Length: 328
Image (cartoon, rainbow, N blue to C red; front, side, top):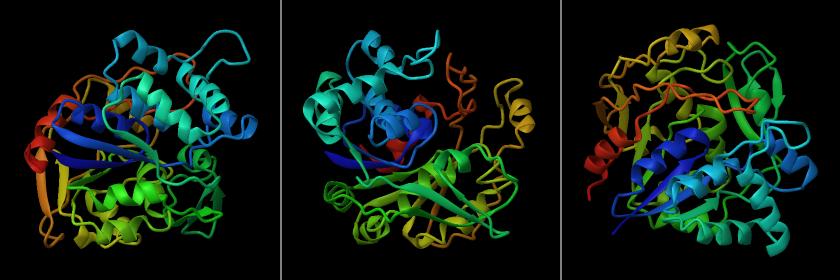
């Protein structure tokens, strides 16, 4: 059975994991630990815990439990005050961490409760903040401040790192080294993808691994971290953090039939569809173009104060293409 590792966080990784759930693979999700907005801010500031939203989403994606239990872990309180905006799943994980004595045990035990197919692991354990340095010298601290900027979001990020430094866990490193395929993206380019690559030891493990590395290109640009980026621009930036030649396959969506009205909403937020300008400028890397766009706009969740991607990949279409790339 092939071992597939997905590195990322957020709804992009959630969609990829959904696409792999019914495949005959051993699946491991390695998730960023830098989120500090919304309910994750409460978990970090008031509970002293690492962020768990990405972990929670990964659990739901890989859970084989009845739909009600999965929906419970996605449920976000939206009435009254106090816990409004918090999710049932994050509060559950916080409670289990308190009972079990650690977040690591909480993830393991909750994965058993949800009958998760595969492993879900934090890529690092340190309590860190993400730091972005922009082309004009501005430094912004915090994943949420980068993701939803109060500064000029048209500025290009020149350097990303964590403060203090974070180091890959031994378990995460072993999963990368033993993988047959590794998937990077989609997701917020800097705060979900590169945020993992700046963890010490991650890129070294990727270079040492014999796995096929697949990069799934984003569907939309993003104000604040990938403003007006074309496909080639993503790779210009990615090359600052890992050798591009190590990426074996790039998957790009070629379906332009976006959900009605959705693109206009993105334009209001200074975001546009990613232009595919890749030709033969990635020597040694296979470029695959396929219709993997969801025709349905994702609806915002009640009580969620954070901006989420409304245009997403279709996990069923993604499953077909990834199965062909990885092999079954």
